[in-house]
Length: 179
Image (cartoon, rainbow, N blue to C red; front, side, top):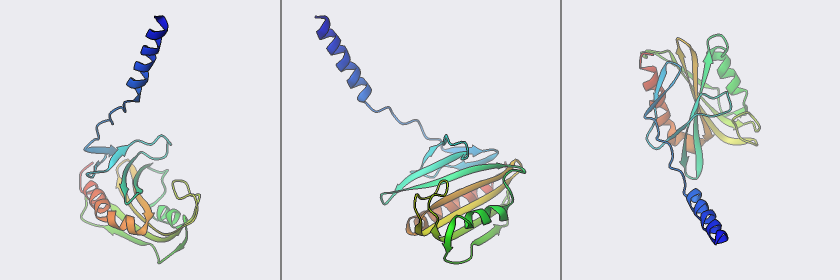
Protein backbone atom coordinates (compact mmCIF):
# COMPACT_ATOMS: atom_id res chain seq x y z
CA UNK A 1 0.00 0.00 0.00
CA UNK A 2 2.78 2.41 0.94
CA UNK A 3 4.62 1.52 -2.25
CA UNK A 4 1.55 2.21 -4.37
CA UNK A 5 1.00 5.54 -2.65
CA UNK A 6 4.66 6.46 -3.11
CA UNK A 7 4.52 5.57 -6.83
CA UNK A 8 1.30 7.57 -7.21
CA UNK A 9 2.87 10.55 -5.42
CA UNK A 10 6.06 10.40 -7.54
CA UNK A 11 3.96 10.15 -10.71
CA UNK A 12 1.93 13.15 -9.60
CA UNK A 13 5.10 15.18 -8.95
CA UNK A 14 6.54 14.22 -12.34
CA UNK A 15 3.33 15.24 -14.12
CA UNK A 16 3.10 18.51 -12.20
CA UNK A 17 6.70 19.45 -12.93
CA UNK A 18 6.45 18.56 -16.62
CA UNK A 19 3.97 21.34 -17.30
CA UNK A 20 5.87 24.35 -18.59
CA UNK A 21 5.82 27.38 -16.39
CA UNK A 22 4.14 30.33 -18.07
CA UNK A 23 6.55 32.91 -19.41
CA UNK A 24 6.78 36.04 -17.28
CA UNK A 25 4.79 38.96 -18.64
CA UNK A 26 6.72 41.11 -21.07
CA UNK A 27 7.12 44.82 -20.30
CA UNK A 28 5.76 47.28 -22.82
CA UNK A 29 8.70 49.56 -22.04
CA UNK A 30 11.94 49.37 -20.08
CA UNK A 31 14.71 51.72 -18.98
CA UNK A 32 18.45 51.68 -19.36
CA UNK A 33 19.41 54.32 -16.82
CA UNK A 34 17.11 57.24 -17.56
CA UNK A 35 16.53 56.29 -21.21
CA UNK A 36 13.16 54.65 -21.91
CA UNK A 37 12.75 52.14 -24.73
CA UNK A 38 9.47 50.70 -25.99
CA UNK A 39 9.62 46.94 -26.61
CA UNK A 40 8.72 46.24 -30.24
CA UNK A 41 5.82 43.87 -30.89
CA UNK A 42 6.96 40.24 -31.07
CA UNK A 43 10.34 40.82 -29.41
CA UNK A 44 11.13 39.11 -26.09
CA UNK A 45 12.77 41.22 -23.36
CA UNK A 46 15.30 39.79 -20.91
CA UNK A 47 18.03 40.93 -18.55
CA UNK A 48 21.28 39.11 -19.30
CA UNK A 49 23.33 37.77 -16.44
CA UNK A 50 26.76 38.44 -17.96
CA UNK A 51 27.22 41.75 -16.14
CA UNK A 52 28.06 43.67 -19.31
CA UNK A 53 24.70 43.98 -21.03
CA UNK A 54 21.90 45.90 -19.34
CA UNK A 55 19.12 44.26 -21.39
CA UNK A 56 18.40 42.46 -24.61
CA UNK A 57 15.54 41.86 -27.00
CA UNK A 58 15.28 38.66 -29.03
CA UNK A 59 13.17 37.45 -31.91
CA UNK A 60 13.33 34.49 -34.29
CA UNK A 61 13.63 35.61 -37.90
CA UNK A 62 13.71 32.96 -40.59
CA UNK A 63 15.03 30.35 -38.18
CA UNK A 64 17.89 32.54 -36.97
CA UNK A 65 17.61 34.47 -33.71
CA UNK A 66 17.97 38.23 -33.84
CA UNK A 67 19.23 39.99 -30.74
CA UNK A 68 19.27 43.69 -29.90
CA UNK A 69 21.62 44.40 -27.00
CA UNK A 70 21.68 47.39 -24.66
CA UNK A 71 24.79 48.46 -22.75
CA UNK A 72 24.99 51.31 -20.27
CA UNK A 73 28.38 52.99 -20.36
CA UNK A 74 28.69 55.15 -17.25
CA UNK A 75 30.13 58.64 -17.68
CA UNK A 76 33.88 58.50 -18.07
CA UNK A 77 34.08 54.68 -18.42
CA UNK A 78 32.45 54.00 -21.77
CA UNK A 79 34.79 55.97 -23.95
CA UNK A 80 33.68 58.38 -26.62
CA UNK A 81 31.40 57.83 -29.58
CA UNK A 82 34.40 57.60 -31.98
CA UNK A 83 36.16 55.13 -29.65
CA UNK A 84 33.10 52.85 -29.67
CA UNK A 85 32.83 53.07 -33.48
CA UNK A 86 36.54 52.17 -33.73
CA UNK A 87 36.04 49.21 -31.35
CA UNK A 88 33.09 47.91 -33.40
CA UNK A 89 35.04 48.32 -36.63
CA UNK A 90 37.87 46.35 -35.02
CA UNK A 91 35.46 43.42 -34.60
CA UNK A 92 35.43 43.02 -38.41
CA UNK A 93 38.14 41.31 -40.44
CA UNK A 94 37.07 43.26 -43.51
CA UNK A 95 34.48 45.96 -44.08
CA UNK A 96 32.58 46.31 -47.34
CA UNK A 97 32.98 50.08 -47.03
CA UNK A 98 33.83 52.72 -44.46
CA UNK A 99 31.54 52.78 -41.43
CA UNK A 100 28.47 54.92 -41.92
CA UNK A 101 28.27 57.23 -38.91
CA UNK A 102 25.49 59.79 -38.64
CA UNK A 103 24.83 62.18 -35.76
CA UNK A 104 21.11 62.95 -35.77
CA UNK A 105 19.85 66.37 -34.88
CA UNK A 106 16.44 67.35 -33.59
CA UNK A 107 16.30 64.71 -30.86
CA UNK A 108 16.13 65.36 -27.13
CA UNK A 109 19.15 63.14 -26.47
CA UNK A 110 22.13 63.28 -28.82
CA UNK A 111 21.95 60.18 -31.05
CA UNK A 112 24.65 58.71 -33.26
CA UNK A 113 23.80 55.92 -35.71
CA UNK A 114 26.43 53.48 -36.97
CA UNK A 115 26.29 50.93 -39.78
CA UNK A 116 29.07 48.44 -40.56
CA UNK A 117 28.99 45.58 -43.05
CA UNK A 118 31.55 42.92 -43.89
CA UNK A 119 33.14 39.83 -42.36
CA UNK A 120 32.91 39.80 -38.58
CA UNK A 121 35.72 38.12 -36.63
CA UNK A 122 34.88 34.89 -34.92
CA UNK A 123 35.32 34.62 -31.18
CA UNK A 124 34.51 38.28 -30.48
CA UNK A 125 32.54 38.58 -27.20
CA UNK A 126 28.86 38.53 -28.13
CA UNK A 127 29.77 37.73 -31.73
CA UNK A 128 29.85 34.63 -33.90
CA UNK A 129 31.93 31.59 -32.91
CA UNK A 130 33.77 31.68 -36.26
CA UNK A 131 34.38 34.33 -38.92
CA UNK A 132 31.02 35.42 -40.38
CA UNK A 133 30.97 36.94 -43.87
CA UNK A 134 28.04 39.08 -45.01
CA UNK A 135 27.40 40.45 -41.50
CA UNK A 136 25.65 43.73 -40.78
CA UNK A 137 26.02 45.70 -37.54
CA UNK A 138 23.51 48.43 -36.74
CA UNK A 139 24.32 50.46 -33.64
CA UNK A 140 23.09 53.56 -31.92
CA UNK A 141 24.69 55.58 -29.16
CA UNK A 142 22.43 57.75 -27.05
CA UNK A 143 24.16 60.35 -24.90
CA UNK A 144 22.13 60.52 -21.68
CA UNK A 145 22.92 62.63 -18.60
CA UNK A 146 24.19 59.41 -16.90
CA UNK A 147 26.48 58.43 -19.76
CA UNK A 148 26.29 56.66 -23.08
CA UNK A 149 23.76 53.94 -23.89
CA UNK A 150 24.84 51.68 -26.75
CA UNK A 151 22.25 49.67 -28.67
CA UNK A 152 23.38 47.03 -31.21
CA UNK A 153 21.85 44.62 -33.67
CA UNK A 154 24.30 42.27 -35.41
CA UNK A 155 23.73 39.31 -37.70
CA UNK A 156 23.38 38.12 -41.27
CA UNK A 157 22.99 41.12 -43.56
CA UNK A 158 19.68 40.01 -45.07
CA UNK A 159 18.08 39.32 -41.68
CA UNK A 160 19.35 42.49 -40.01
CA UNK A 161 18.28 44.60 -43.00
CA UNK A 162 14.72 43.31 -42.62
CA UNK A 163 14.74 44.39 -38.94
CA UNK A 164 16.36 47.80 -39.60
CA UNK A 165 13.06 49.80 -39.55
CA UNK A 166 12.20 48.34 -36.12
CA UNK A 167 15.70 49.11 -34.81
CA UNK A 168 15.58 52.70 -36.13
CA UNK A 169 12.14 53.33 -34.61
CA UNK A 170 13.32 51.88 -31.29
CA UNK A 171 16.34 54.16 -30.94
CA UNK A 172 14.85 57.30 -32.49
CA UNK A 173 11.79 57.20 -30.24
CA UNK A 174 14.02 56.70 -27.18
CA UNK A 175 16.24 59.64 -28.22
CA UNK A 176 13.17 61.84 -28.66
CA UNK A 177 12.04 61.53 -25.03
CA UNK A 178 13.24 63.54 -22.09
CA UNK A 179 15.14 61.38 -19.59
